Amino acid sequence: MKIKAPLATITALAVGIITLGGYFTTAPTFSMLRTIFLQWASWLAAIALLVGIANLLGVHFEKLTTGKKGGIYSMVLVLALIGTFALGTYDYISGTWGNASQSWLQWIFDYVQYPIEVSMFSLLAIVLVYAAIRMIRQRDNFTVIIFLLSAVLVLAGSVPFFGVSIPVLSDTLTPWLTHVLAFAGARGILLGMALGAIATGIRVLVGVDRPYGG
Image 1: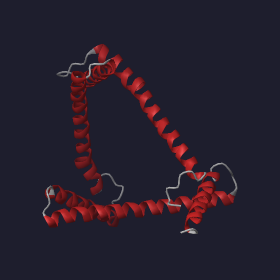
Image 2: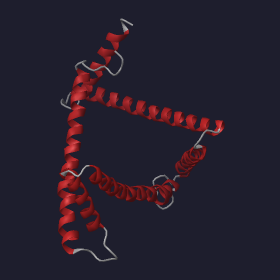
Image 3: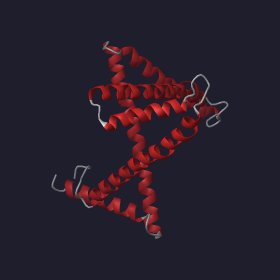
Image 4: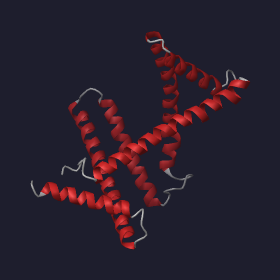
C-alpha cells in the first residue's frame, strides 16, 4: 500500500502533464504520447460503457426473474436494448450502416426516439408552468413572478393560438427572450462548467485531489 499510493499519483500526474503538454507544444514526442493516451482513454470509456450496459441488463433481468414491482418496465427496457443491438448489428453486417433510407437504427431514431423526446419536451414546458404557478402560490416573490411571466410569454409566442400568431409577441419579444436572455444564461452555465472542469483538472494535476485512490 505504501508503494501503490505514490506510484498511482506519479502515473496520473505524468499522464496528465504529458497529455496537456501535447496541446501546447509541437514536439512530436508529446503529440504522439498525447494521441496514445487519448486512444487508451477512448477504449477505457467504451469498456466502461459496456460494463454499465451489462450491469443494467443484470439488474433488470433480476427484477424480471424475481417478480419485483415494475417488472413490466424492465421487460420493455431489456427487449428494446436487445432489439436495438440486433438491428444495429444487422445494419453493420448488411452495409446499410449510415444509410438514412435503409438503416433500421435511423428508423428507430425517426419513429421511436425522436417522438418520445418531443413528447418529453412538451411535457417539460407544461410542468415548468405548473411548477411556477405552485411556487407563486407558496412564495410570491419577484423572481418567481419573472419566471412565470417569461415562461408564459415564450409559450404564447412560440405556439400560435388556433393558427394565429400574436405580432409583437411572436416576432419581437419571444425571439429576444430566447436568443438573448436564454442564450446568455446558457453560455454562463457552460462557462461555469468549463471553469469548474479546469479547476478540477488543475487540482488533480498538482495532486491535491486524487480520485484514482492514490
